[in-house]
Image 1: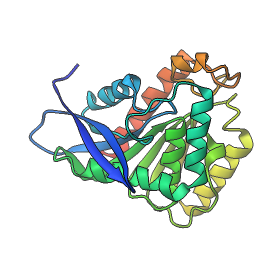
Image 2 (image 1 turned 90 degrees about the vertical axis):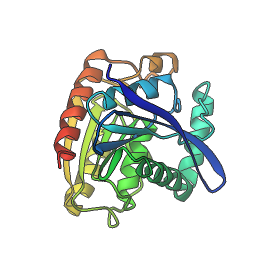
Image 3 (image 1 turned 120 degrees about the horizontal axis):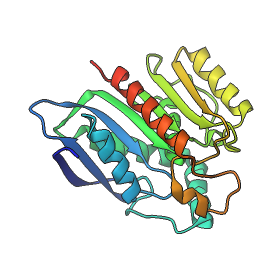
Image 4 (image 1 turned 30 degrees about the vertical axis):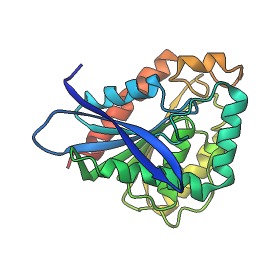
Length: 242
């Protein structure tokens, strides 16, 4: 592991206090940035480990605390409640994502002209929504997003952004019809996109904890997890090169 700068970062929006986690290699210049949007479990040790792995590849990484207060849901019912509260007020949801990007931009190690957004699970849905509503990002890496959480209408999105979607073929929250709808929306808007589809993989394929959720449509898949990491690294290297 590299010698990393690490710190917690307090930020807020609409009275909601959040504590993000920032990490970056020590360098004498600003580094390309990634805003990491956590999965349904919140900004856990697993999310911070993912941030460190991205930073070890030479990036300044801000891991957001979208739920607020470092909240980590204890099970499926609480997860569904939290996700429901976000989709019921999309303006507030996107305000939290925007606040994370703003907090990332205040970190002196991060090059604000080279920032991408990467999300897992509901965080991947949030990353796509943020782009859809015109959020400032060079591009999005979406890893097992719930495409069922997306709203229609991409007129406000940035045309020169790029999108990588990594999804399992058996994910009930990202069906072929939903891929087609997203593909059509991105193509119509002129946004460059890539789809990595992993045969047999289900929802939440990067996370071993998904096996404990009691959801038949979610399961860890080591092969898909490793492939998505490689694809994400390649995509980010190209996207943030200059």
